[in-house]
Image 1: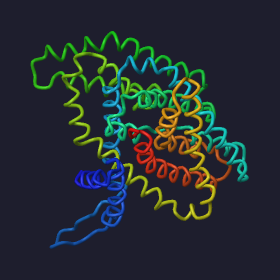
Image 2: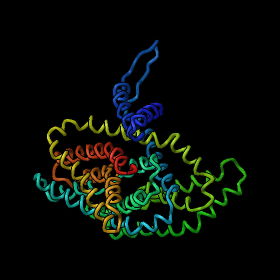
Image 3: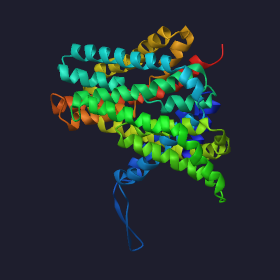
Image 4: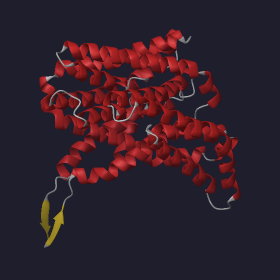
Length: 391
C-alpha cells in the first residue's frame, strides 16, 4: 500500500495516470520480494526462522487482487448511467464485434506467416480477442471521463467482448457445446439483469429498515459479491457480475448513500493492491520467460503491434459505423487495447488441453501472451490521457 501510494503520487506529479505508478510499484516489489522471500532458513539467537517462498505468499495476494478488480468494476457500474448505457448499446455491440473480428483475423494470418500450424494460429488469434478494461476504467475514472459517450461504450463493449471471447474459447476447446455456453450466458443476463431491476431496490430497502451501522452498505456489498459469484459459476467472468451489480444498484436513488463508502473501501485498500499485483505478475512473467523471449522477439513485437492496431481499427470501425465521431472512435479503440486476465486464461486453457502443436510452441505462446499483457497494460493509460484530454 505504501509503495502504491508513493509511486502513484510520483506519476501523478509527472502528469501521468497514477495507475502506471501503482503497476511500477508492483514491478519493484516483485524484484524485492524475489530476493527476500526465497525459502531460506536462518538460525537467529537459537531460533530457527523459515523465510516463506514468493509462491506461498502470492496465494493471499492473488485473493486480495481479485477482490480489487471486482471492486473496481463494481464502482464503475455505480458510476455508469444505465439509461446512457442502454442508448449506447448498439454502438457497444458494433465496437465489440469489430474488436473481436479484426484482431482474430490479423492474429491468425500473421501467426500462420511465421510457420505455425492452423490450430496454433487460431489460439493466438483468440488471445488477441480478449479485452481487459481494468486499467482503462481506472484511468478514465481518474480523468472523470468514465461517463462520457466513449467511456460508456468501452464498458458496454468490454462486457460483450468478454462474452464473445468466452464463447469462442468454448468452441475451440470443445469442453462444452457452444450452444450450452450461450444458453448459460443468456440465462444469467435474464435472471440477474432483468429480475435484478425488480428485486434489488426492495433488497436495498431492507438495509434502510435495519437499524445497525452501515447496514445499507452491507446489503449492497452482499449483492455485489453474490453477482460476482454467480457470474463466475455461469461461465462468465466475475467482473461482469460485479459491473452489473454496480449498474443495478447505481440505478436506485438509494445508491447515493453508499457510493462514498464503497469508493473509500475500494480505492483506500483493494483497488491499489490489484494494480500492484498486476505489476508483480508482469515482472514474474518476464523473469520466468526471458530466455524464451530472446528466440521469438520479432514474433512478440509483431503480435504486440497487431494487438494494439487490431483493437484500434476493429473497435474504431465499429464505433464509426454506429455513428460515433472520428475522435470518439479512436478513443474507444485505444480504451479497448489492454489484455490481461482473459488472454492468460485462454493461453493457459489451450496449454492444459494440449491444443498447441508442441510443448515448445506452448512455452513460446505463453511468453508472448505475458509480454503482450505487459506492453498493452503499460502503454494504454498514457494513450488514453493523450486522446481524452480536452482540445
